[in-house]
Structures are given as C-alpha cells and as structure tokens.
Image (cartoon, rainbow, N blue to C red; front, side, top):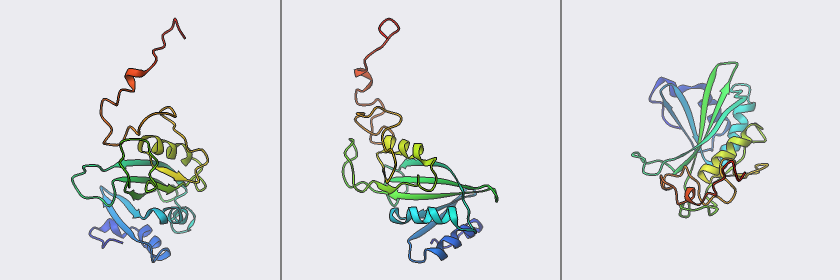
Length: 187
C-alpha cells in the first residue's frame, strides 16, 4: 500500500484491507477527498467481497461499475484500461472506490477477445452489477468472468468495435453510413 502522503490516506478501509490481505499488491490514492484502492485483477473479487461483508467496512451498495481508457494519458498508468467500482456504506455515509487496471495483449482496434482484458464479475455480490458490467464490456471490450448474461447492451451484437476505446475514430468506421433508414412509411 502507498505510504500516506495526506491525511485522507489513513482511511480506515485501507488498513482493514491491508490486514485482511497482507500478501496482496495494493496501492492507495486520494483525490479531492475521494479514496481509491488499486488492486490486482486476480484479487479484485475477494477484496470486493471483503469490503461488502466485513463488519468494519460494510460497503453494502455498489453504486456503479465503469471503465476508463488511459491511452495517451499524460502520466504513466499501470495499465491501459481500468475497471472502477464505486462503493457506498450508507450507515457511515462513506463512498469508496476500487480500481483494477488491465493491459491489452493484442491490438485493440477490433472486437477480438483479449485474454488479458478479463476480470471476475461481481454480480454474485451485487446483482445490480449485471447491467453496468455489460456496459463496460460493450463500450471497452473488458469481459467479466462468471457474468450471468454478458452480451452487448448499448450497441447491436455484431457491432464491429468498442466505441469508448480511445483508438476508436471519432467519426466511427462507417457504421452510420450503413444503417438501414426506416421512416414512417416503411416501418
């Protein structure tokens, strides 16, 4: 875990996770009063289950699962993609983030399945994660092991890419031009 450089890095959740997972590679950050724990992909599910179930943490609500593409980010990152879990403990009015970095092992300009872009699903911990994990899969191509229904949610099943990847062209790859136009007279 990172050496505390600000008072917020002594958040009690950091100490609880460090004590429960002494051999896990953990990093901690704080930005604008929000605490983030960075974990390895293989440890994510166990740590998230601990954060939900442990009496000292009790983050019982998963507010969101989202993704980030750090391609060409000005500061070096541990991986190109991140999956971010936004957790809330209502009884303490405490919000906590868990971030998992993933680095692709093949080019990211298509829809090829990359074995390096996998993380365990948390649908068994928070059933509401089903749709947000599907959105991360659809937009970034990150797959979730043991997800009950991992398929696209915002684009059609044969969509030729993952549109929130930063190497995806802003104007697309011609998908819009090939739409079949349906108007009121033909629908």
